[in-house]
Amino acid sequence: MKKSAQTREHILQAAEKLFSEFGFDGTSLREITHEAGVNLASVNYHFGSKKGLIQAVMERYQRVFMPALQEELEFRVARGGISTESLLSCFVRPLTALEDVRADGAEVYLKLLGFAYSEIQGHLRRFTMNRFGSVIQDVFRLFVQANPHLTAETLFWRLHFALGTVLFAQVSAKALSEIARADFSDPTPENLMMQRLLPYIAAGISAPEMSLPETSMHKSEALS
Image (tube, rainbow, N blue to C red; front, side, top):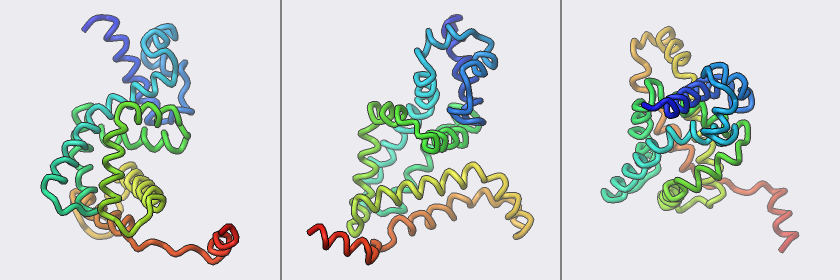
């Protein structure tokens, strides 16, 4: 590997480590350059800005995860019988594939994704949609198809609530497993975590459409 490529990789690894621990806002370029053993000019040369570096860190995972997810969705559509739970199962292999990026790839990616939402990294959403928007749109379209009783707005909220549940379960997996071992004498509770999680999330996504609160109904009537 050429020195320039090595420098870029060192910066990415340092940024990924610090971002996943302290968040994007909580990590400075000075801390990243210190961790990577490079100067600020190297970051600007390879990534242009901190936003460019954030996008590059996320893309390392997205370029593995998104194509794998697209394959799973296409396979599911070809088999037919689309349901909420079957669509959720399409995410399992792509998350596992992130172990090819690094040993704890799925956990790191979900941590980064959590920070992207909690810190409102709007540039990252635009970056992701520009490169993988078709996959994301396919995901939403298929969930709409599997839940014709729900409005698009309800699905928007429920899918993001589901994502929050997954983020919590992933980043808390070690603590939850320790509690389960102590309380239920289960030697390997982590082995069944995903099987327990998917039906729970699917039930929440596909629950009946909520009725509008009375106050909201009055407002709608007043506007009509």
